[in-house]
Image (cartoon, rainbow, N blue to C red; front, side, top):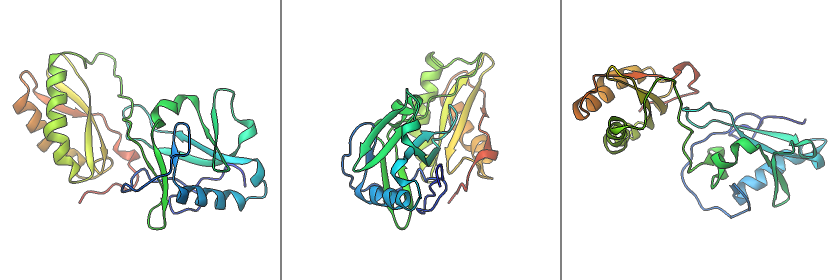
Length: 224
């Protein structure tokens, strides 16, 4: 049926954004699709009655400041919006909304029987913007430096990371959490006891950290 969701295991549903690196075959503009992924997509498309009119629609559905989430569906490529980018990848039409072109530039869509369809994206989500917070001063630079060199390397062992949003005039820094920390029951403890301690010790004038993450939206998060 048209518009069906493609699951990470190759059936209809959502796609996993995480997977180990593997070789890919360059297939054109914006996003690269490996041979294995292309074969799986064509198999799913050809199982539909209106296969000849269907293409893969790929879009980013996460909000600013959130870890990338993707929606893949089979859609009629002739009905794509004028602003959509429509390209042919090895016999498969791929439709990408204009708003997502930069976010998906250089990404790789792959497939393996153990992981299903996966997207490896070298880009970073657009930072959340909160009115009243400062994110372009000296303190912000110091906070981002500590996050990049100390906080995120430590969280990476658990599959997580934090993103700096900004700070207010009262010494409070605001962050969001992603990866394994997003939605995890240990996220708040990690933020308050770990990240806050590191930042307050290293950045003059910083007194506390607050988490802006919507942890209720975490989908099957893990914390090893």
